Image (cartoon, rainbow, N blue to C red):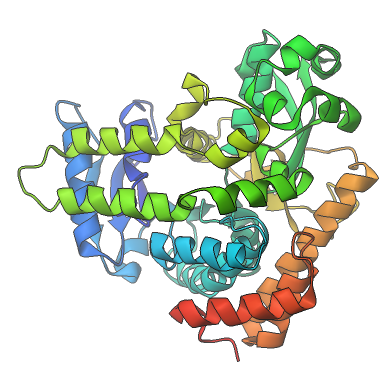
Length: 448
C-alpha cells in the first residue's frame, strides 16, 4: 500500500506538533508518510518545522515534512487535507471577544456574537479551499477542525459533499470523563451524543448494551467528581436527564459567564495572542530549543482553558488527563478508519441525512458515526427533547444566515444572523455588533 500524504492547512499553527506527535506513534500499514504544511506566514511555518524536526529526531521512518505558502501546491496529490486555519489570526479572535463584551453579550470564539463574527470571516475562505480541493485533489478527504467547526463543515459540504468531515475533541473528552467516573473503559463504551458542534448532550453511555448514565445522574457524589458535574451542578444535570457539552454553560449560565468574561483582566483570545506571539518571537532565535519552548508554552495554554467558566461555577482546576488536547487522536482515528477500512465509531460533524427529524437533511450535526473506507455514516439516533431541539434549530437558523451573508455579501443578512442568536438580546445590539466588527476586521469588507 502506498504511503499516505497529509496536507495540514494552518501548518504554522501552534497545535500542529500535537498532530505530528500522534503520527509519529503510528507504525501500521497505510500510515501517513508525508506531511505538507501550508500557511500564509513563512516565519510561523519555519518555527513549527523546527519543532517537528526535534520531535522526529531518532524516530525511524518519521513522516517526511515539507512546507509551502502556495495553497495549490499544498493540495495537489493529497490523500487527506486537515484544515485548521484561523482567519484573522489570534488578533482577530481577541477583537471578536472584545467587541461583543463591550455590548454586554458573550465574547467567545465559537458561541454567540464572537462565533458569528468568526464565521462570517472564515466561511468565504473555507469555501475557496473547498472549491480548490474539488479541483486539485478530488479524491482527498477533508478533515475540518477550523472553528466554528459545524458551520465551516456545512459550508464546505456544499462543494465537497460527504468528503468533508468535521471533528472536535470536546464530545470525545466528555465521553471519556463520564466513562472514567462510571468505572467503564472509554474505548468499550458507546456514547449517545447528539446535537450541533459545541451544542450537544450526552443522553446515554452504553456498556455491553446497558445504559450506565442513570446511575451517574442518581449519584450526587459521582456527579461532583468530574468537570461538567461541577460546571453545571448536580441538580441541573438531573433536571436535564443528560450531560451537556461544556459549551452549553454559555447558554444555561449566560449572565454569569458574561460577567466573568467582563471581569477577567484579559480575554482568552488576547491571552493566547500574547502568549503565542512570545513563542513565535522566541523561535526567531536560531539557537532557541524548539521542542522545549513549545512544550512550555503549551502547558501554560492548557491549564488556563475555560478558566472563566470554571471560576464562575466554582469548578476548580482542570483534570490532569484533560490537559492533553485530544483532537489529534480523533483526527488520527478518522484517517486510519478511512485509509485502512478499519471500522471505528467516532463522534463527528456530518450531514444529518435524516438521522434526526429536524434540522433538514443537509444540515451538519454532531453525532456518533460509523467510519470505514467510504467515509462517516451517522448512527441512528432518537430525537432530542423539545428544549434541545429548540436550541439546535435556533442556532442552525443562525448558521444558515451566516452562510447566506457570506454568499451574498449582504450586510442586512449579517445583522439578521446576530439578531436571531439566542444570546444576542436586541436587534439594535446586532446592528452595533456588525458596525463594531466591520470597523476592526478587514476580512468583513465584503459585507455591503
